[in-house]
View (spheres, helix red, strand yellow):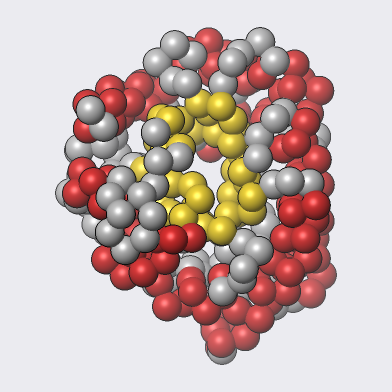
Length: 258
């Protein structure tokens, strides 16, 4: 299993300055396509930096100000376009997995959240064929429990995701905030990517591994077993708040995987 690392906060710093602190301990890295690391806007610079390293790469699609589940057609289409514009860059840097967020409930949708799944399914139907044609695995990520977000309860997530052309990025920390770790085990056979971080079961605070109360070691053991589906042995991305906490979690996860 490859241990990777990532943080949205990294995108505010030039990529070379981030990687020079991480390469050595990490053999993989997840590029968050935002700001300085934007694969649509800054591809030549990002590609040039990554070419200097031998890293297994995955990508997190942009999510700031985007809503693939928007019930306002113009906003949904703009979010789809922003995602589609990222896909060629994923190929250019040699990655083959891209994670997307399902989005959130807009004010008007709060009156009837049942209209949200159709909006997201429409977005997935527009993005998935393009990703597939490029040889990419498109993964939908489960969200942390926040009233504005969608896709944090397994049933809600399943209703929106149920798509043979879209895999799943299973986020252990997010599932813990929603009390949904056990329920998401139902979807294990569709996990193509995993994010890991810790919290106290309430807010999505991305603590270093072992500093919260999420049953991470037990869940990792389950992931690596054949229980409820094939054993997961691909990349596990530590999502941290900063470089120091990422390296701390890396040391912890390395011990846990022995």
